[in-house]
Length: 296
Image 1: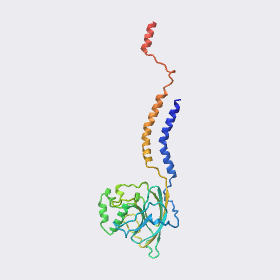
Image 2: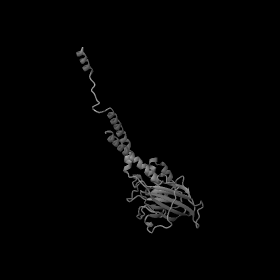
Image 3: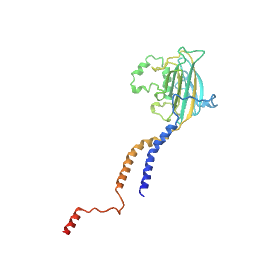
Image 4: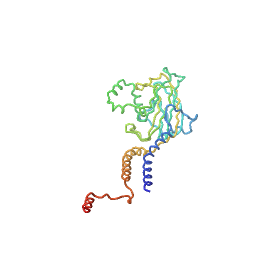
């Protein structure tokens, strides 16, 4: 009768250890995969309140102290058109939040009134607000001949404070005429180096279409004319695990290393125990010798 409770206890412990792994596996399968092969299934017309979810900016019209409108978290599809002039850049400001997958589809075409001499080819970047501020500062100081030399003289660990970087260092698509990519935000928190000093609201992100020589060695040079850009943004809900699951997964292995040996030791110690009726006392050698002496 004792084997039943032991088996139930072992099964419960194993279930507790394996349940987080199974939950992660199911979530990975159910979560949409962000890939470049995704497409934007966006309605032909925007909703009436869509202007509360994104805002268009031109790099020439913005200053460091410019006032920005409050935006709602982006949870719906939208589409928009804009014109990027020669030696300039435009951006779409949005508030991307966890729980959604965002797919961006961009298509560049030549402006009939001012066709670019190098074709409708530009650069596309996704960046946070802190890097957008650095990006606009680099545009304002683009005519400084000695700026590149100054940056090169800075230590490598300090350059990130002066140079702008695309989101996660990967969302930079240069010398393209069309681009489709997806992104999902894991959390609204960020490191101190990614936070704008003068921004106390929710994190903002900028989808930038670049038509000037921004200083990156791999970027496209100035287009030599105007480009029309069509932007489609497809928003889908995605399944996410609670934050505490990560702590469970981290603690599962140490706990298993502690509980596993205890279970094995308990089973080993109980394997030699039987019923009291079957047990017998082993006599001492001295007792047996005394008995033989008396018999002799």
